[in-house]
Image (cartoon, rainbow, N blue to C red; front, side, top):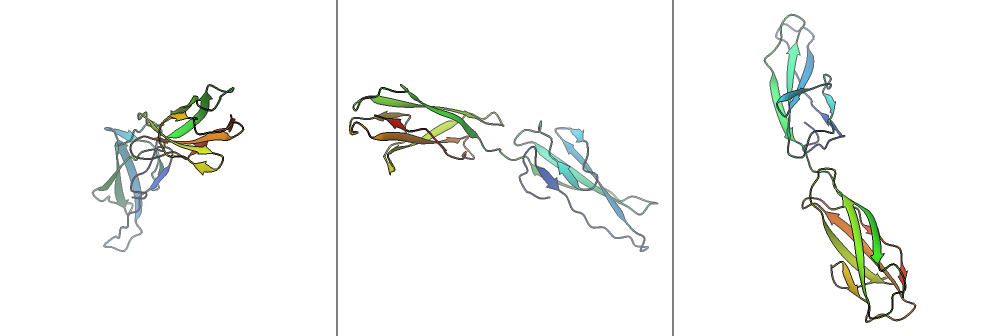
Length: 173
C-alpha cells in the first residue's frame, strides 16, 4: 500500500499480482474496511481515504483474484491513517497600535488542526530583519527605538507535525 501513512482526503493505492494455474486471465478486485465497517469505492485498488477516518485508524484492503470461475482467498494488507498538518489561521498584536519602546507586545495566534489535536505555537520575533531570541508570545520592546518595525513569525505544532510559518504585519513603534 502506498503511501504508508495516508491522510483523509488523499488517495491510497493497493497493488496485487495474481496468476492462474490454467493460464486464464485473472482479474483482481479490492475491498476496503476501516473502523469495523466497509469503505465504499476502491475496487480498482485506488481509494480516496474518507474524511471521517481519524488519525490512527487502521485501513485494511483485501485483494481477491478471480479467473471468472473461481476466486482466491483474500490477501490483506493494512495501513494506519496518518496525522494531518495543523495551520496558523491568524496572527495579530495586542495592543494593535500606539506602542512605545519599553512596552510589552503580545502576539495572539489562532490555529486549526484537522485532526482536533491541541496546538502549541512557536514564535520568532524580528526587529526589521534581525531575528530576536526567545520563543514566547510576549515581547519586551525596551531595547527598541521609535520608528523600528516589529514582526513575528508563528508556527503551530500538534506534537507530530508543524504548520507552514505565518508572518504578521509589521508593527511600527
